[in-house]
Length: 395
Ligand SMILES: C[S@@+](CC[C@H](N)C(=O)[O-])C[C@H]1O[C@@H](n2cnc3c(N)ncnc32)[C@H](O)[C@@H]1O
Image (cartoon, rainbow, N blue to C red):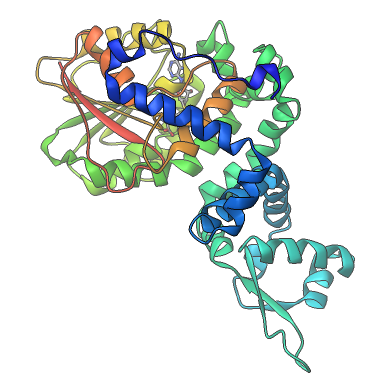
């Protein structure tokens, strides 16, 4: 076995520190690792009926990891070519689609073959004498009905550009990355000065993906007991619009960078919400936090920033809140059962590429809130926490 793969000896203090169970577990894992590295064991696991399904599943998962980038690019091609919209009226033949897309049939056929294998599309009527047609697959239908997912797929071209050399990205976390300039506030020394062009693209992306987030938050928290909701870093105001639409008596205030708050004000006006919604343009670090709300929300904001910044923000928010007021913190959180790939695999790398922030575990955020003076801090129960987890804290 190569030297670097040889297991380290158990720390002598393991049993004393963590008990016998931890020692037995560590020994078992060490034995399992040594077995997994043996080719003979791998072959046995594939032939033995009880371990065969596990071995197969591992092989398929490993292939998926190796090929994941190709899958994503097939998805991007389908979205860029508007394949899903094209099939929303019903199945079409290869020739029809090639004519509409002005593409070579053999090239398009290659894409359709991939998209069918990935459940984005389905092949219909593929029997003798009947022309083969293509319709929407289960996943293609989901992409079609979700503008937020489509916007993220398009946006990923930028992220994947930075990820093309992941080791180089990990070795230098500079502000010269495509993602860092896209999320201009993440590394800016003067975020307050960012103009409309610098905030326009990310604000539109956040607005497109926000309804899925709002649905998850509205499903786990009852806003009807509140009179006034302040959304800090509220983007173009989609979260407030969604909550406001379901709670017509709620007063709404949004705070975001001046250029973003202006966009939110336009949205509120368009939706006829401007009579009960205010937009405050400013930086939440250098400008005062608006007072008077009995509920303050921070949605997909804290994870964008490093610990010191977040602690300052938590302190500032708490100082601006009246006794009895509540803070609702919602964002993807690390080590969420059933959603580990979201915060731990995807967002961990995403925020690294962006140049600031990290995915935090709920207990880390709860401790930070406690250190900032919040009390009665609890993690809300959620049926399916995919986009965000929600923490509620009181002053
Ligand atoms: C990831 S976006 C989330 C937007 C929105 N809460 C949502 O979930 O769609 C983070 C938001 O924080 C805002 N932001 C970043 N730095 C800020 C600052 N210093 N002061 C005020 N807002 C800021 C950004 O402009 C952006 O709208």
